[in-house]
Image (cartoon, rainbow, N blue to C red; front, side):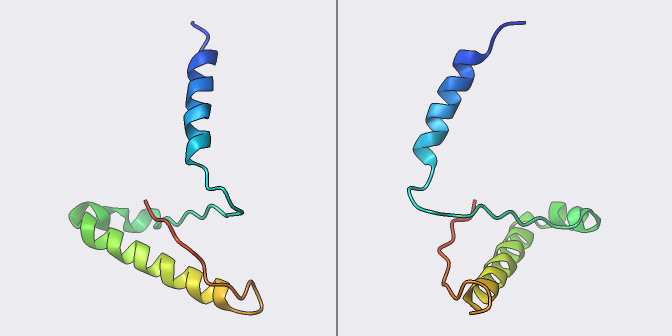
Length: 77
């Protein structure tokens, strides 16, 4: 086996350039395993539904004064 130290360091350096320069939270939304078969039949629609529901959930939850009372900025990929 070869040492991957240099590869790891290059990867880390690249990732550091992608980090937002502000406080942020990383949030991941997934679909239940039981629904994944639907994803394969209409990926575009299912992606749109997932992102729309995720966005609406974050805006509702984080906009509530009991939690953050904030309007989040969202980057989806």
